[in-house]
Image 1 (tube, one colour):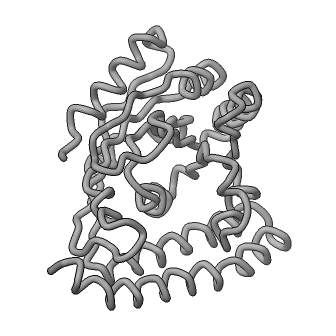
Image 2 (image 1 turned 90 degrees about the vertical axis):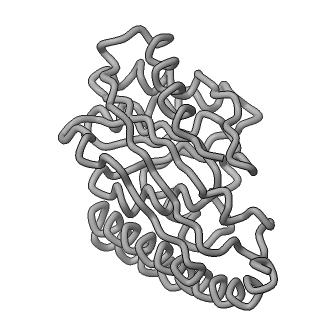
Image 3 (image 1 turned 135 degrees about the horizontal axis):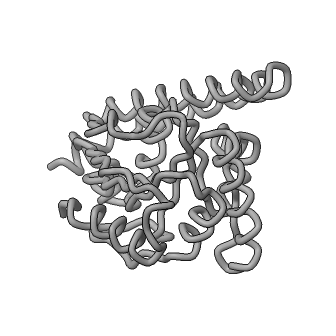
Amino acid sequence: MEKLISYPISVIYYLCFGLTLVIFHPIQWVCYTIFGYQAHKKSVDYLNFFLTKCTNILGTTYTFENKESIPQNAPIIFVANHQSLFDIIGIIWHLRRFHAKFVSKKELGKGIPSVSYNLRHGGSILIDRKDPKQAIPLIKGLSEYIEKHKRSAVIFPEGTRSKNGKPKEFAQSGLKILCKYAPSAYVVPITINNSWKMVKFGAFPMGLGNRLQFIIHEPIAVKDFPFDELMVKTEQAIVQSIKN
C-alpha cells in the first residue's frame, strides 16, 4: 500500500527536488564567482535546507543527537555509515557550522545541477575509486585544508551505500591519511539510521514517513590513540548503534 500511495507523492517530490537543484545552480555560480567562499558556502547551506524541506513532502524528518558534543574551533573528521544521498543533505544542513567537505567519487563531479558544481568548487574532493594512488594526494590536501582552516571532512569508509541498513566492511586508508595530516583533528563517529528506507523501492517511488536519525558519538582526539585503536573505536561506535 505504501508503494502505491508513494507514486503520485514521489512525482511531486522529484519535481520540487529537481527545481531546487536547477534554481540554486546559477545562485551558486554568482555567489562563488562574485562574492567568494563565504557567500558560496551560504548558498550551499540553503540549497540543502530546501532539499531537506523537499523530503518533508514524503513525510521525512531528521533528528540529530548530541550535536553539542562536537568540539568547536578544531578540525573535525566526521566518519559515518552510508545509506543514501539523504545522509549528505542532512549533514550539510544540520552540521553547517562545521563547513563539511566530502570525499566523493569523481562521477558526481559532473552532470548534476548544483551538486556537481559544489563538489568541484566548495572544497570537497573527487576521487577515482579504481585508482587508489590518485586519491592519496587529494585526501592529503583535504587533511591539510581542514587542519589549517579548522573545518571538517566527511568520509564514508564503507565506500558504497548500504541498501538494507546493514554496514559493509570499513576501509581504513582514507581515514588514515586524514588523521596523519590533520593531527590536531577530532574524529567524530556518526551513526545514520533509516536513510536507506528512503530508497527501499529503488529510485522511484520513494519510501514514505521515515525518521532519519543521526547519532553523534563521543569525539576521539587523533593525537590520543594509535590509528589502529582509533579505527576500532570509531567503527564500533558507529556499528553498535545501527538499527536495521
